[in-house]
Image 1 (tube, one colour):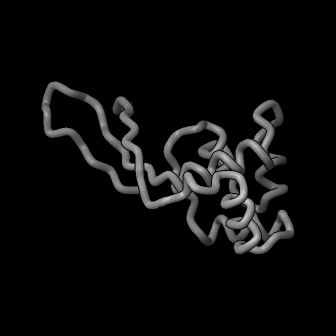
Image 2 (cartoon, rainbow, N blue to C red):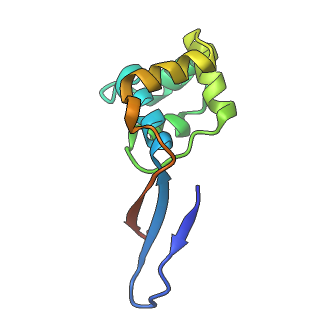
Length: 108
């Protein structure tokens, strides 16, 4: 994930570049395959990934899922990566492009 930091010393914020496709991938996984009301660990086990990845996706914060992680998730969901991206394309269609959004977050 590309990170740009403001050069203002009094401003304690970080701007994070989030590509729309990355956001759509997380949104799809969060909304279609995960349940925010269920414990994270069993969901992580069902998708073959560490629980911190599921937490990042559920948080609705900027997160770029590595392709290798996405491949593992797709394997456990019994679909190919190409089929996954067809689902993304079907759901988000013309909104998929190489645009990005800047999200600002306060440094912890």
